[in-house]
Image 1 (tube, rainbow, N blue to C red):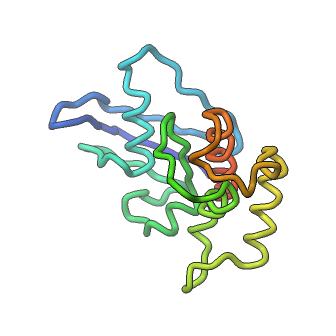
Image 2 (image 1 turned 90 degrees about the horizontal axis):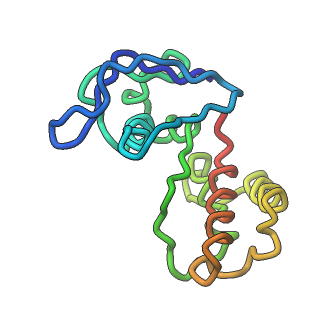
Image 3 (image 1 turned 180 degrees about the vertical axis):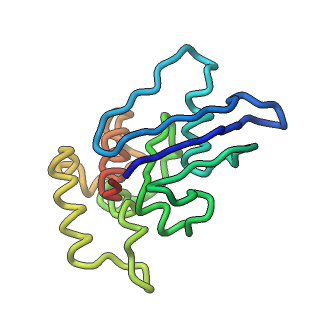
Length: 158
């Protein structure tokens, strides 16, 4: 999967923050966005994850415009773990990690056997299996981050 942007303009309140950005993020490579505070790294991520509509330009995944993809198809191709997330009250780590499987759920919204296996594998890999039955809102900040990372990995995007 290659994520590409061409002549991308993005910003807030009509004020342009990203000007004519053209780049490609290759599949299977680690890509870092580095820059000082206020250099629009988060703005770019929000635009690429469809949380912020672009002012102009296009963004594609494997040549398909991301803003024309259905939410389900898009969420099977790209996932985002933001710096800060709202911590849901009263749910366990296992349930949170299972939310990562949402793009693949059946009509009734329940996890199938394969989904449950993926959740278990991801929790083992992230060492969240030992806190799987604990409530997310009662974990330390580091444990919460690990649980959200597990949820993102369970989404299995390329």
